[in-house]
Image (cartoon, rainbow, N blue to C red; front, side):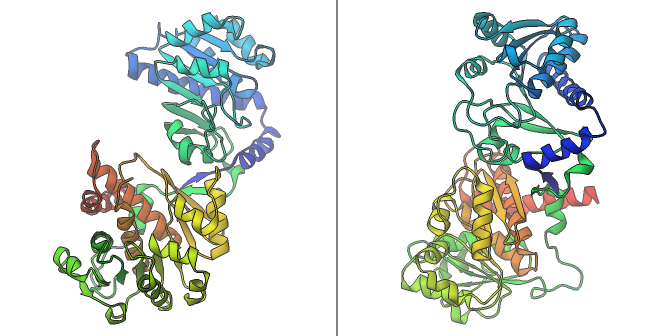
Length: 489
């Protein structure tokens, strides 16, 4: 697992490190890493380093200092570097002196705005050192104008300017980086919502904070983590020992939801899937290996239930949800099941105490259940998980999975192709299968989200897809994460 730390935690770690290591030393380490990555990008995009042009967007404080020291490194590599000072009177003094001594060119904004525009628009690469971890809110107009002129690769120092480092929220003009070089560890802004898009490829540089950071505030599961957790049959397993999952989904109006959720459960593991509901004929036709019945009371025993996709919010749907919650086994509740729980608080009483329940809302469903998400998606998911004593998977470009005990993991999407009708039905089926196999609910939701997103990426291959194509790619995604786990073992 990869860790993510809030700004407060990173600042506290820095203060402890400063007690034994001069701040200037850490800045040099950070800036050297920015300079090295910038030189690599210049080579990738132009074929050379020496003789190229780089522009620095330099704000007040340490991020501006990092950019200036990175400029010093590039000047020593034969790069022509111009620093556009956006806060000339508050520019990092030591960095500015070193930059001038190395032969760097200085332009001040707004006094030399035209020269700054020329430097940025003609640069082979631009380094964003406008604001750092203390920055909040959008770019101011002079900085935004310069950012809009960038034509080459853009490297952000620590966090792209204009992105909230703790929430990833973007409230206006912001840097959209190709690469972000960050120090000590990832920050929430790198992996959440808009910030995940703006950060580009994130490179984490160790500047000596590692031992001081402690347990992360958020975690990211990589492919190897998911592969190691994904259930696979052993020589002693049979169809029952791997976990039997039940699916209560779909209706005469929405049979496709039943087909997709059930199919995901089938493809996630090689155990047994039972379907119960009015779409039984459609399910049997598509998935003959499924034991399908018309009534939940005839479904037989299962180790976990998936309930909600296409279920409807009428009396019949309410009765099905109440029956599932009374079974005393883990449940993944999606779509109409969430809407029913939000509308009828009495349904919560049907749940057996402390029985694992995973809720998978998108923003609008979440609002009905727990209020508006707001800018801080992690805080919203944590509050909802604690209040409901459930695992809450808040869908989005960055999927947030919160456990009742405060643990949070984030799945950062590679693209937006899975944002299509029926995609959530597939996700719920994956979660249900992992719950039935005994995977801990928080991790089951996180692993399912990761494989779901990977399947969408595989299926799309750069073009729009439907949920059926995503579903068909699930086995390929599982093979990929299992291979990653084997390679890292």
